[in-house]
Image 1 (cartoon, rainbow, N blue to C red):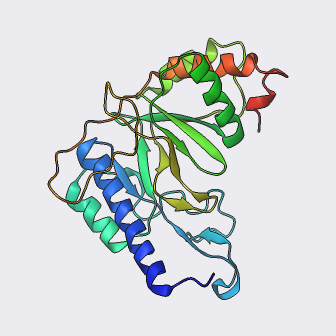
Image 2: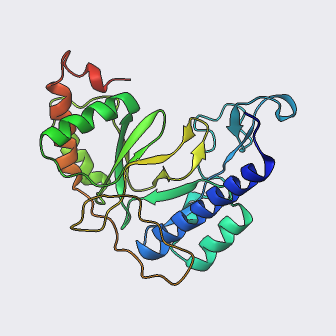
Image 3: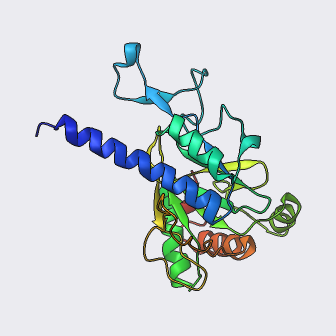
Length: 243
């Protein structure tokens, strides 16, 4: 079916507005510091390839489109005017959360393993916070932790899956509704206010609506224990949580 150009432009404007709304929700309603990601460009000679490459100068970028460049990570802010200016200038930029400090941290793992682990966690009755999904990795948002505390938790374990990655102080995470080289970033488990079930994404309008409360976040120790338990209890040991 032939795509109608006007419809494509309207869809693009809708997606761009959703990124600004998401950035404003994180920064002003939830007090999560954000900044724009570098974004992607069409790869190949003269942009002729359908693949998306990173807009940064590195030809072999390890995380195309999904990292800070200009501004750098230290510029992450909760200031509404700055956030509006950034996404007005770059409406297609991914939304990056600067993790750690007073902001959420995260634990991520490969997408297939993430889906399996969430099924196990649900069966265990584990209450989870927001879960971010990309085509390649799933990330469980958790309450802020220090690197010292994380080190103590990992040291106490007999074994930790090598596929786990930890996004803490000095790190970042791409949030929905961004798009990077692997594809669309979405909520597998949408954010929910404290004491409520996650029924859908909570995004602030660009009007003076009442701001939603920040999403509830589990403690990293509970999530880590459950992930390790899920991996050791899976057939084949930890293979289900390996790359």
